[in-house]
Length: 257
Image (cartoon, rainbow, N blue to C red; front, side):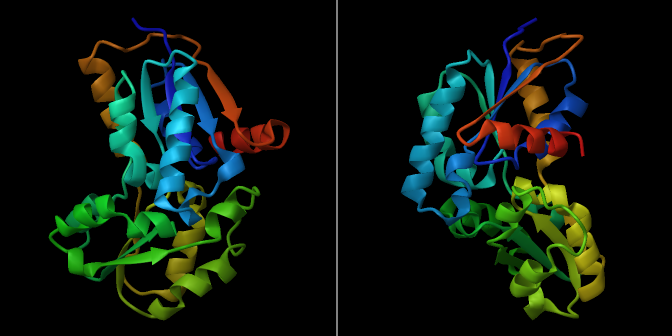
């Protein structure tokens, strides 16, 4: 058994949604979480800035002696996953927008891929989309403003209508078969987005995110490399580049929501 912790990194608090899934699927592991809240959101930054910040954050997590890294940020994955894997001596698991399961399940209607501006522009994402059998049905929708509001602790139905209207009004009344949550922050407002979709679109509007698939991949790598732990009382350690006294209570709220 390898008692070293799993390192989880996100540009802010969105990765807590992936960590929440990990605690369900891998409840015997210890975790160290790092959110680069001081520099969030990454989605509005240049690729060079995202790369530099991601590498710095990876180095910070490595200082805690982690055995594997879970990169729980779509934007950081799209920009920096190759450089991070080359830089680190441990396995790195990454997350990507769940367009593959969406394309496999959605029979008719458009698939809206909601994400940060940066994610929708990245070459890695567009290469992934080009492989999809229904790539012409996927519509990328950058959603600036959602991450910032979620990081303020706002999570209620109806509290995002202004932002969602500004990004989605062009699809009013259309047949939407699926909605991909291409940012880990958005998982915390699943019900908000589902409610909005029900009121403004027709079609099944099924929601997809990559959290469970990413954690199952983490589990496979831990097993294949003999890195599992059998901790009876797993620990979660929180670190941030922002103001910890403000962010730790919000992190706990999101983790337990």
